[in-house]
Length: 272
Image 1 (tube, helix red, strand yellow):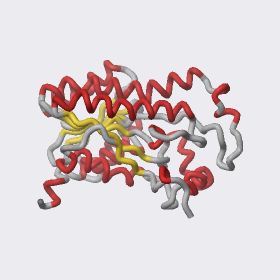
Image 2 (cartoon, one colour; image 1 turned 180 degrees about the vertical axis):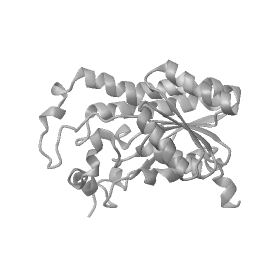
Image 3 (spheres, one colour; image 1 turned 30 degrees about the vertical axis):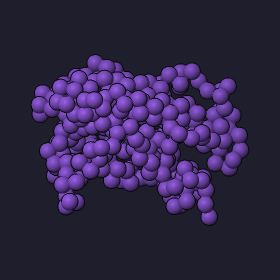
Image 4 (tube, helix red, strand yellow; image 1 turned 135 degrees about the vertical axis):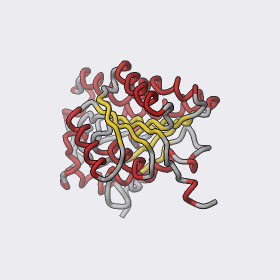
């Protein structure tokens, strides 16, 4: 088979949460660049408008919707708007997420008291779980009725390698939220397979974005993560675009309940 039909997403209707910057913006960019009709969802109105303008300046036709992914009514409204415009929704990227701060060790391998369990804030737990895990559940609830009506759809979650490993430099709250996401991917892929709905995840290692105040933009903050990656560097949002295009394309039509890990080999363990 020619490679072009395998990865053809032209004309697909796509929505992306957390799309104003970072990974979500990269997903929107790669999908729109390949002919998809893309809708960006984000809680930050100003950043969202800037992202839409940025992609528009590149000749890409996209639309923006201000939506808080922790609020079911906002998600339902945004999805309804997309469906009203196009008559369907083919792919939903559930990407919105936040950091929970550092883990119980710092970059020098010393204990970080602020990251130890007895010092973690229940309020932080609630906020991170709402944004990183509950929002995935709510987003899926918002799109499943439409996916069932059209007998198919792709639901692609931004998970993390934290979903399947313990962490030292990353907050245990964040790791727990992503573990919940990893389970949801398997559970709901199983439930929804009957309707032709595919549920998968992209699981990156650390990514250089604005999350956590953009701390990984600092070479000093990146250093311990880079030492842990056999390939010697951590992800940029662009490193995840290939996995996004693949999971949204005909090439992945028999893949469900899976996570594609993009981590420079970090889950293999340190190398030389």
